[in-house]
Image (cartoon, rainbow, N blue to C red; front, side):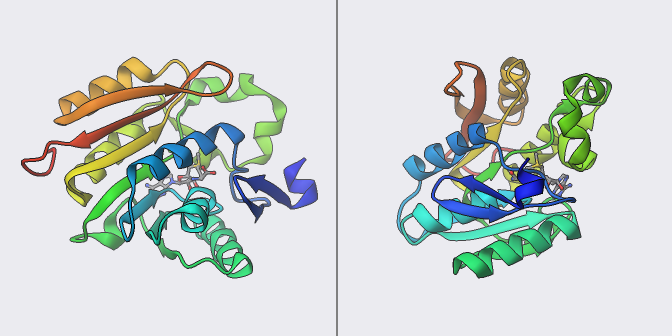
Length: 213
Ligand SMILES: C[S@@+](CC[C@H](N)C(=O)[O-])C[C@H]1O[C@@H](n2cnc3c(N)ncnc32)[C@H](O)[C@@H]1O
């Protein structure tokens, strides 16, 4: 339906969407809410896999003078993000990048990501409407956790000491993602539920002595 209308509301912004980019989901607003609680004036925030720019633009809109960057591997998705930023008049740095490659050597106070987390074997059973969206934006791999592992590794090198990583998860993935974060040396790991009562996000910060891994 969002593809037909060409627009989808997310937090306070309206985003242009279409073939080639994931339609932002209401449950992803939880990540924005959590990020706003953890950030202060001038903080540097990285949206890993920004897609339409939903999270990055909502944070630029609602945050306290946040310096927001978004990285995205898909050129088609990044075009939607750039169009959305321009139309909304919001300042966000948008970079085409495989993970954090394009921001290598830079540090962020918070990294947020809604990575692909569907298991490759599950896609067909999840409903025909998902067939309109790019599979690369939805499917992680055989376990569904492959991209979370990549984001955790990227964030461990991109975050300042004590910086936060917030990850969206599938409702059955909390224990596995908590384990991934613990293994990578993250601390203060917490799980939050969405409005439907499903586990939907995991947050953790790097130890204050330095990068987590
Ligand atoms: C589930 S979508 C989320 C999009 C957007 N953040 C949102 O919440 O609506 C995952 C996004 O991650 C991007 N992605 C997947 N692998 C990536 C990688 N290695 N580097 C950067 N982006 C990646 C996909 O292209 C897709 O846009």
